[in-house]
Image 1 (cartoon, rainbow, N blue to C red):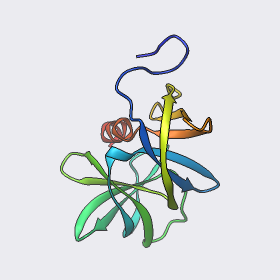
Image 2 (cartoon, rainbow, N blue to C red; image 1 turned 180 degrees about the vertical axis):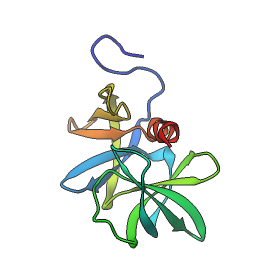
Image 3 (cartoon, helix red, strand yellow; image 1 turned 90 degrees about the vertical axis):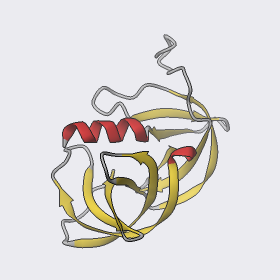
Image 4 (tube, one colour; image 1 turned 90 degrees about the horizontal axis):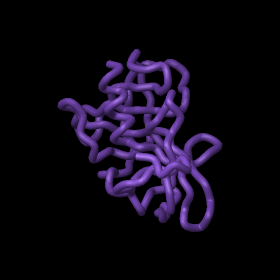
Length: 146
Protein backbone atom coordinates (compact mmCIF):
# COMPACT_ATOMS: atom_id res chain seq x y z
CA UNK A 1 0.00 0.00 0.00
CA UNK A 2 1.49 3.35 -1.04
CA UNK A 3 1.29 6.58 0.95
CA UNK A 4 0.98 8.66 -2.24
CA UNK A 5 4.67 9.66 -2.17
CA UNK A 6 5.99 6.36 -3.51
CA UNK A 7 6.66 4.96 -0.03
CA UNK A 8 5.07 1.73 1.05
CA UNK A 9 3.29 1.72 4.39
CA UNK A 10 2.39 -1.18 6.62
CA UNK A 11 4.41 -3.58 8.76
CA UNK A 12 7.90 -3.07 7.36
CA UNK A 13 11.11 -4.41 8.84
CA UNK A 14 13.03 -1.89 10.92
CA UNK A 15 16.30 -3.80 11.22
CA UNK A 16 18.23 -5.09 8.25
CA UNK A 17 21.46 -6.84 7.40
CA UNK A 18 23.58 -4.77 5.03
CA UNK A 19 25.46 -7.02 2.59
CA UNK A 20 28.13 -6.43 -0.01
CA UNK A 21 27.10 -7.68 -3.44
CA UNK A 22 29.41 -6.98 -6.36
CA UNK A 23 30.22 -3.25 -6.38
CA UNK A 24 27.12 -2.34 -4.39
CA UNK A 25 25.29 -3.10 -1.19
CA UNK A 26 21.88 -4.55 -0.47
CA UNK A 27 19.80 -4.78 2.69
CA UNK A 28 17.87 -7.88 3.80
CA UNK A 29 15.27 -8.00 6.58
CA UNK A 30 17.21 -9.37 9.56
CA UNK A 31 14.26 -11.45 10.77
CA UNK A 32 14.16 -13.32 7.45
CA UNK A 33 17.75 -14.63 7.73
CA UNK A 34 18.36 -17.94 9.47
CA UNK A 35 22.14 -18.41 8.98
CA UNK A 36 25.09 -16.98 7.08
CA UNK A 37 27.67 -19.30 5.56
CA UNK A 38 29.30 -20.97 2.58
CA UNK A 39 27.77 -23.83 0.64
CA UNK A 40 28.34 -25.65 -2.67
CA UNK A 41 26.01 -25.00 -5.60
CA UNK A 42 25.63 -26.81 -8.90
CA UNK A 43 24.99 -25.66 -12.44
CA UNK A 44 22.52 -22.86 -13.15
CA UNK A 45 18.83 -23.67 -13.54
CA UNK A 46 16.54 -22.01 -16.12
CA UNK A 47 14.19 -20.47 -13.53
CA UNK A 48 14.23 -16.75 -14.27
CA UNK A 49 15.74 -14.24 -16.69
CA UNK A 50 16.23 -11.67 -13.88
CA UNK A 51 18.20 -13.78 -11.39
CA UNK A 52 20.34 -16.89 -11.46
CA UNK A 53 19.27 -19.98 -9.52
CA UNK A 54 21.08 -23.21 -8.71
CA UNK A 55 20.56 -26.17 -6.44
CA UNK A 56 22.91 -26.08 -3.47
CA UNK A 57 23.53 -28.07 -0.30
CA UNK A 58 23.49 -26.37 3.11
CA UNK A 59 24.24 -28.57 6.11
CA UNK A 60 23.38 -31.70 4.16
CA UNK A 61 19.97 -30.40 3.02
CA UNK A 62 19.12 -29.14 -0.48
CA UNK A 63 18.53 -25.40 -1.00
CA UNK A 64 17.54 -23.32 -3.98
CA UNK A 65 20.28 -20.72 -4.23
CA UNK A 66 19.42 -17.31 -5.74
CA UNK A 67 22.11 -15.04 -7.15
CA UNK A 68 21.56 -11.43 -8.18
CA UNK A 69 25.02 -11.47 -9.84
CA UNK A 70 25.99 -13.30 -13.00
CA UNK A 71 28.37 -16.24 -12.80
CA UNK A 72 30.29 -18.08 -15.48
CA UNK A 73 28.63 -21.42 -16.27
CA UNK A 74 30.39 -24.11 -14.23
CA UNK A 75 29.32 -27.56 -13.05
CA UNK A 76 29.75 -26.46 -9.42
CA UNK A 77 31.14 -23.64 -7.26
CA UNK A 78 31.29 -22.49 -3.65
CA UNK A 79 28.84 -19.71 -2.74
CA UNK A 80 28.56 -17.40 0.27
CA UNK A 81 25.05 -16.57 1.30
CA UNK A 82 22.18 -16.17 3.69
CA UNK A 83 19.93 -19.13 4.42
CA UNK A 84 16.43 -17.69 4.48
CA UNK A 85 13.67 -18.24 7.01
CA UNK A 86 11.25 -17.80 4.08
CA UNK A 87 9.87 -21.21 3.18
CA UNK A 88 9.40 -22.31 -0.39
CA UNK A 89 7.42 -25.25 -1.71
CA UNK A 90 9.26 -28.02 0.18
CA UNK A 91 12.78 -26.63 -0.22
CA UNK A 92 14.78 -23.98 1.66
CA UNK A 93 16.04 -20.89 -0.15
CA UNK A 94 19.37 -19.08 0.11
CA UNK A 95 20.44 -15.71 -1.31
CA UNK A 96 24.05 -15.41 -2.43
CA UNK A 97 26.01 -12.43 -1.06
CA UNK A 98 29.69 -11.51 -1.11
CA UNK A 99 29.72 -10.86 2.65
CA UNK A 100 27.71 -9.32 5.46
CA UNK A 101 28.63 -5.75 6.45
CA UNK A 102 26.50 -5.29 9.57
CA UNK A 103 23.11 -4.52 11.03
CA UNK A 104 21.35 -1.29 9.99
CA UNK A 105 18.12 0.45 10.92
CA UNK A 106 15.66 1.01 8.07
CA UNK A 107 13.73 4.30 8.04
CA UNK A 108 11.58 3.76 4.94
CA UNK A 109 11.14 1.42 1.99
CA UNK A 110 9.64 2.54 -1.33
CA UNK A 111 7.84 0.46 -3.92
CA UNK A 112 10.07 -1.34 -6.41
CA UNK A 113 9.87 -1.12 -10.20
CA UNK A 114 7.17 -3.22 -11.90
CA UNK A 115 9.80 -5.46 -13.52
CA UNK A 116 11.37 -6.34 -10.13
CA UNK A 117 8.97 -5.20 -7.38
CA UNK A 118 11.00 -7.12 -4.78
CA UNK A 119 14.04 -4.86 -5.36
CA UNK A 120 12.96 -1.78 -3.41
CA UNK A 121 14.76 1.51 -2.68
CA UNK A 122 15.26 2.01 1.05
CA UNK A 123 16.47 4.87 3.23
CA UNK A 124 18.40 3.94 6.35
CA UNK A 125 18.18 5.93 9.59
CA UNK A 126 21.70 7.29 8.90
CA UNK A 127 20.24 8.79 5.66
CA UNK A 128 22.12 6.42 3.33
CA UNK A 129 20.14 4.69 0.62
CA UNK A 130 20.34 1.03 -0.36
CA UNK A 131 18.46 -1.58 -2.34
CA UNK A 132 16.19 -3.52 0.02
CA UNK A 133 15.53 -7.05 -1.25
CA UNK A 134 12.02 -8.09 -0.24
CA UNK A 135 12.84 -11.78 0.21
CA UNK A 136 9.27 -13.03 0.62
CA UNK A 137 8.14 -11.20 -2.52
CA UNK A 138 11.15 -12.47 -4.48
CA UNK A 139 10.56 -16.10 -3.46
CA UNK A 140 6.85 -15.85 -4.42
CA UNK A 141 7.80 -14.37 -7.81
CA UNK A 142 10.36 -17.10 -8.46
CA UNK A 143 7.94 -19.86 -7.42
CA UNK A 144 5.44 -18.41 -9.90
CA UNK A 145 7.99 -18.41 -12.77
CA UNK A 146 9.20 -21.99 -12.21
